Image (cartoon, rainbow, N blue to C red; front, side, top):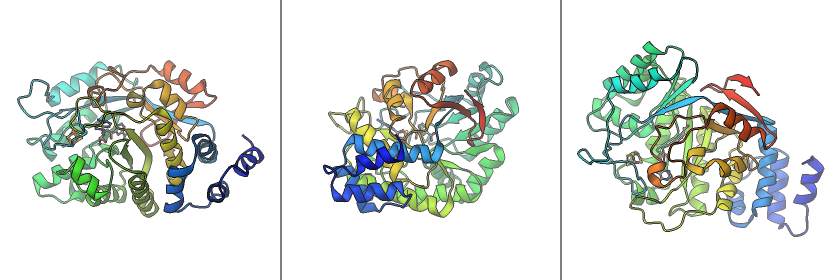
Length: 375
Ligand code: V47
Ligand code: SF4
């Protein structure tokens, strides 16, 4: 859409004065307030937020849509926490639990042909017996067999446990992991920052304040990270706005977040007891409003194994410019929660086709968003 076409939609008489004011601010690259973000959630129709998000997406990234070639490893699903939305964690002794040794993880990596992936993404449950030494040994061993591979690993929740178990400060843990080969951190464990909701859905987990502190510390020592938001469960729009605001504030301070990833709550096999997942139109509105509000985030990522390939492709029209990775089939966190992608896997060609079909330039990136190839 041209600038004039956007303005004509925004200025239509059916659009409320409040929404028109918000749209004019967005178009002029002025920051919108928390209250205005809430107004978008409560009042704006999908088409309206879609136009604004697409405008911001193009201003920020033109037609580039990133993907990377990566492998997910989930070392264990044994976890000390009991998050009620989690379909994946098990206690020791449960027939559905697993714990991979370092050798087993190395075997998975060594089976992947050299240079066919650039990143390994490692996230799992918080295993009570595994601490900083185990994870440093793992990272060093990976670097030894594949020196060029970039390692994105450990949520703030896993980092928090490594610090508590060892007695080291967060900064010391992060430095040790960095020395062992950690390059970036994923955005998991953020869930929803509102403390009252957190007490209901993940009571024992790292607090919101500490999650933000761990990411701030990582940014300070040169480890870029991602941020997520789990939505579509018991939260209200106000809680999403609060969550996004805390992220936007930290990003103003550090500029260390690389991408924001909204994670849609999936309902199967967990104790939260939500009967219905959100309709796709609400997913798209959530992506679009996040794109508009997080004006200091360069990338908004759709995690396709959870959303499904078709809905993920649609998000590209609603602010998304990052399609995550080709991901081999070992990730279980969403398949156990009922995601369609039981064995998520997209070849590079399939990924490029999905992106190109909506008129975008599929662009392979590394973990630090350096461009590798443009298709
Ligand atoms: O923190 C758990 C979520 C997260 C469910 O940074 C669920 O590149 C939906 O953060 N329904 C971990 N979501 C995964 C994660 C992630 C994934 C991909 C890429 C990146 C990245 C990060 O998974 C948890 C939690 O929010 N989760 N259970 C569920 N039932
Ligand atoms: Fe453990 Fe993460 Fe599941 Fe919570 S969401 S129970 S921390 S694996």
